Image 1 (cartoon, rainbow, N blue to C red):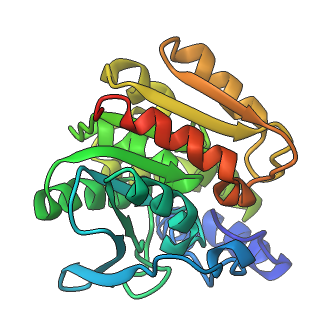
Image 2 (cartoon, helix red, strand yellow):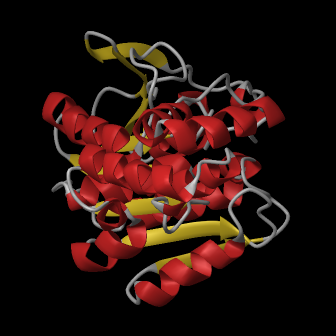
Length: 277
């Protein structure tokens, strides 16, 4: 999620967390939820093919769309990602008669808002369904996949779920960054309360490992063994907790280029269309 903390931030949070723990906790919660910039565009995002159109689902909520008819597939990119990362997959889905809407998350591009949390992104998935119609499937990459766990906990119910390179327990990530910021233990208590308050429940209930196994929805997990951003151990932990989960393991694709691999796209499409034949 957040960037590594510079030394001056550690000094500020260390001192502020001892003097005013509640205020320091609020500042840390804001900081960890704000993406800054985007990852570099990959060449496969710019390759020739059907061009997506930008749509505004409601004022301030932007997305990229491929196709206008057929069962709906929602895409949700990860931290510092972008909707065009679903280009290859959307083209393959379009060839099979499905349309794709890939949401541009707050704090990343044109969508309004500066914060991106599992709760916020989960709410956007539910809102997209209210606007665009029932989702046959949802595909989430990295943090976007983790946000599917939050959406499931809040009642989101697509027919198929695809999780790509995602953290299993996203609730732990803010605490890891807050500790890196040097937030003292006393302030960490307030920090945890803020996260639970924002989630509307204990934040761990939004984790994929919590909501996924209970959802009863067919799901596919795709993860590269050499992922340097979200370790493959996360995939193993989720598979152990969710026996019905299908797992596809890749090699040498890493964290982001996995979405640009033709074999991965084809496997995801075949999984999604199983019930549409």
